[in-house]
Image (cartoon, rainbow, N blue to C red):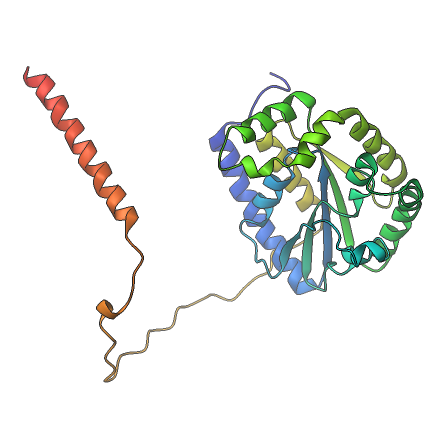
Length: 286
């Protein structure tokens, strides 16, 4: 038994369900206590950040927990103070914001791909700890995750995406270029950690070669980082429906319904199953 042991799907789904219920409890606590929470997700391409974020938000209220995934800066944004466009997405009281990549783009892709100058990069490394300290002093709970994936596993995931028509969009020219610069990204990550992995705002590394483990580990840790209590709610009782009093609804034939493709598939499957049973009966007769 060791590092290569993979959690069974049934165990994973059971534990994930338990954790998602606790995330709902955390969400209610954040709302009632007026907390402001920022969670940053960084890591190499195909490291599993998106999958973890999806499982976190799956059962949560998008008005309380929202995901921020910013694109390339506009011409105007590129002339602003670097942190300015991220500040606009920080949470108000009672909100949790998950950054799917963040201001750390400057220390990663911008540095490696030459999208910023050496002066801008150096200024970021000096300013970032102060910026995060300012956020924390203002009352924001800041949690930073780095998803760590091996070279071999990233290669496997890229190949899987390339061969899957439903996920091919996840492979961008930038992803392909990043594969060629694996060592450069490693150096950039190490430098970033040297400057920004502080006692006040540490990085938490999530080993993500096994996606199920990464998700369970990340969510479990997130729940442990914010002391919360279950918020008690009053019992919900559904009111009786109002009775129709002289109102006649328009006939359903006047409405346009979408084609019932699902029913057609169900009938086709049932017919195929029945024919299969008949053929088995013929074999027994023979």
